[in-house]
Length: 121
Length: 277
Image (tube, rainbow over all chains, first blue to last red; front, side):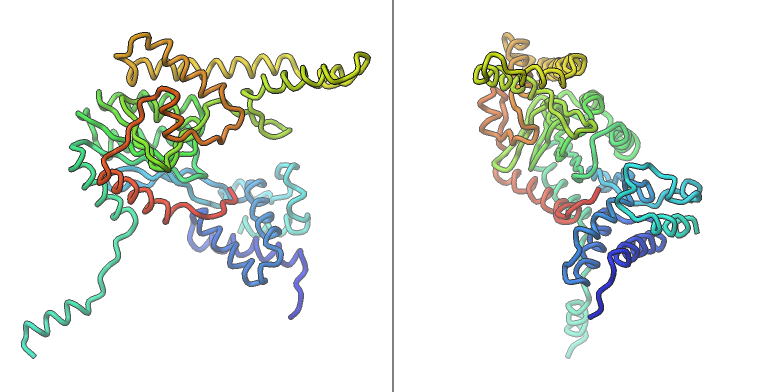
């Protein structure tokens, strides 16, 4: 079995998350978690922490964000939940490179540049 | 095979639709309403969702314009939340109180932090073995991480003890003291007082409205919940709540079972995952 580089894994994680979001428009945090678990399972659990770190990095950078999402139980109550969405296109057109410095260590510079162009498509 | 037999067989083979979580919760709420002869509203927060201004908007919008609740004789709120912003919680209590003169909170699993204040804002509170409230002391989030102002007296006590153990000419205390900001400590102390006052007021005006010396009783409870715990996640269970003097009650078994089924249905669909949020 060929080993994939750390950067390769990071790129795959980012790609899968954004593909899913583009396809569905929005996902629940639980669906995102399932995706990350699948990615980790494909690698036999190896690098699970890295996979989660990359996903957290996307949140920290503001590329994807969590917005409140209230689900009515018809007229019998309310579930106060949230959903994961991609930042609006205009906010990401400049790319992820210009985003807050505190998150820069989470994702390599080369990937951030790619990420910027992927999200802006 | 008769036509009737064939029809029965075809009916048996028809795939039955599994009700989704929301439908199941609705069914249990209907049953609970019949048993309690009240209006029951579950407000179930997922762990990553804070009780904040946005959720107050959602709850108001739902009750006023979707549910069109009006004023009801008895309102039972099933509350599950890990907490949030104190100001938003105070505002939410005012909104919920406006719909009924007999407002109860039922806590199936937990109503922590700011949600504890909401859970104590009604005329009654129902808890059972797995239910927990939490300390109300504020948590400050700064560059160095989270800080609980309620731990301030412990810091001072620690420095006092350390001073006794150190030689008289030691500069250790002086060095540590230089790192403490007097202004920030003042703000921390004020934030504790800001939390005691609204809870005292809420307890006095509903749960303890008929209690003699209600201000003193409610004040004592509020002070304990705000400053009496150094760990913000501490589980304040029904036993401890009762010891504090809060008249928490248990629901009859059949009603509690329905509440638990409502919570479990919510929990199995919306919770139990490692949130990265």
